[in-house]
Length: 483
Image 1 (spheres, rainbow, N blue to C red):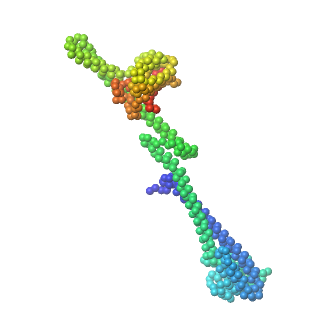
Image 2 (cartoon, helix red, strand yellow):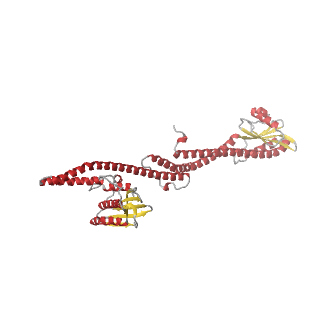
Image 3 (spheres, rainbow, N blue to C red):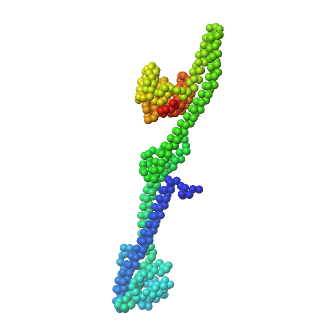
């Protein structure tokens, strides 16, 4: 079973981002709620302390005169005034004498007058104990454990004359209700923030992960026969991910170059093997063929054949001569001595092929920049050019175009022959240089194979390509090869 760390970046980035946003929002909201609760409690304590001190000063003289009625009116006044915030509204106000008895109360039913505070229950007994401990001080807040009330106690005294204690009672429920309202507002605000940030996080997570997913998918295609390219505009930035895309494109170029080199080596090895086989067969055929031709020649000279037999012998001889010429085409000997290549040799080739081109009404574009002799065997170079040009003339459309270029490139002689006409498929081009090629409509199909063998023995290279509706043969021959 996959863990969260094994998920795709398509989900991992948005999910981790969402988790971070939600955690941050909850932590901030909780902190704000706690601060709001502390601020609310502090506001309540300040307000209640101010109220207690004001009432204590006002109650001093009525209590000194035992004016209970006046004291009752004073403590009821704050409860009659409407409060903007219920959390700051007292639940009850009680005046105690020195003996902790109730002098006057705003809730006589629950806190009856002239009753000892300790007699009202355990909570009030604990409150009386706390008041006794802090008697004579300033206003203070007493928060008893497990109590639903909050007590603010203020001594009623003036210039050291202590008359009693003022107790203001607040309900914690009212405080919590105000806190809940503030918490609801904070939670709603947090929800709105999440409603905005989470879709943005999901959008950016998907956008950030899309290039990674694309790169992972393309990397997975490298082990297939044809890897998928990545267009440069998909991710145009130069950060770490952009450098990964650049490295993938470079790796793809190197892989294609490697595949092309492997294919070229396989084709060269195959053609060389076919060439060795064909040459071996040619030698084996030449031996009995020579004997047969010698026997026929003897029969013609010394035999006394009638006209029909003589005609049959002549027919057999012509067939054997054709076999000898075909077999001779399979024997390419590039080590025989020949004169160096001269500019005139190129012109001779032009003169030889122009009549063939004119018969088809072809246009011949000729470009030869050779101005000096080269240490290349002239007969073999002439044979290469003648074979390529005759092949191009044959393949070109009627009134079409044949172009030939001969030029120097550093230490290499470059020959280029191209023609319009029917284009070959990649599969056909893969078998173009094989002997007895089925692509040859007439003849024995050895011209291009012989050309390939000569180029190989001269240490050069030959290639064919389709470009702008034309077939182009390119030959590169290094100087000094074959000398």
